[in-house]
Length: 46
Image (cartoon, rainbow, N blue to C red):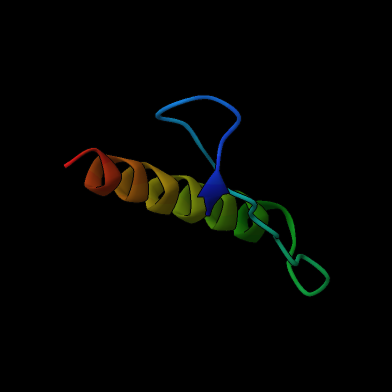
């Protein structure tokens, strides 16, 4: 996570490696990544 361009903002880069995954596995991976991002953002607000 890096500082964002404005006050109170951050930038997060996520890489999804899907060479060995298909359809539903990729969707689950994206869902898990988004949940992790949401949790990190909520914790950062505290």
